[in-house]
Length: 138
Image (tube, rainbow, N blue to C red):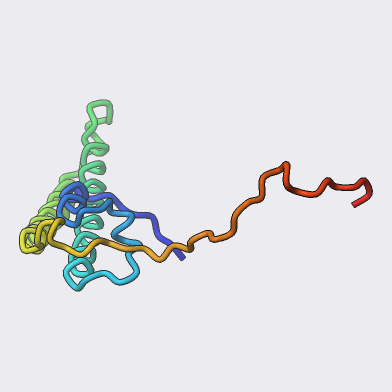
């Protein structure tokens, strides 16, 4: 079972630091300890950022200018503010740790290259003029 890759605000930095696009890093068969830890932190960050966006969108929807004033609820908005506070604190924590891990990683030119186990096709096609003609009925 494969889950889609949730984007995060550090994806471009990831590619810079590890010298490969995120999808290739996720597919690496033997990732280093640093890469595994960084990918795990990145996954936490992506989920946290998704929650921040969800709360933000909910607050925008509840306080939209075209919504009736009678539908505004200070209890709901207060709870959304608490959710946003917690989600933003979590995001800051994830960013702090992830940025520290990314800064500690050596530049891509000093890292072993990311390799992938891809099958190599060793059969060669025979040009059409060298193949025997097919007979009808086969």
